[in-house]
Image (cartoon, rainbow, N blue to C red; front, side, top):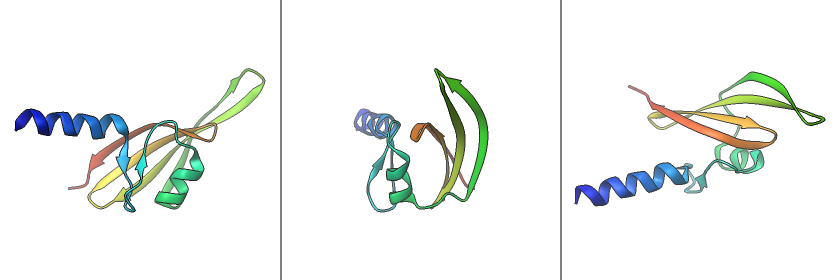
Length: 89
């Protein structure tokens, strides 16, 4: 039973996380999908602007509070590139 729970948790972790409407949000998703299913973030912080080839790309961290977790989504070039979370006590 313990192994089934661990495998299930690992699958969810690697697949992304579930938005309140049930949609899976994962790395590589376009910003439009994130906004559609999570709405506007509570806070946006600009982390960096860097040049990739001839393009300048802005990197931001978007903060969301969903139930008892706070999610920090890193957005770069119109895509979700990383997601981490912490539990609100």
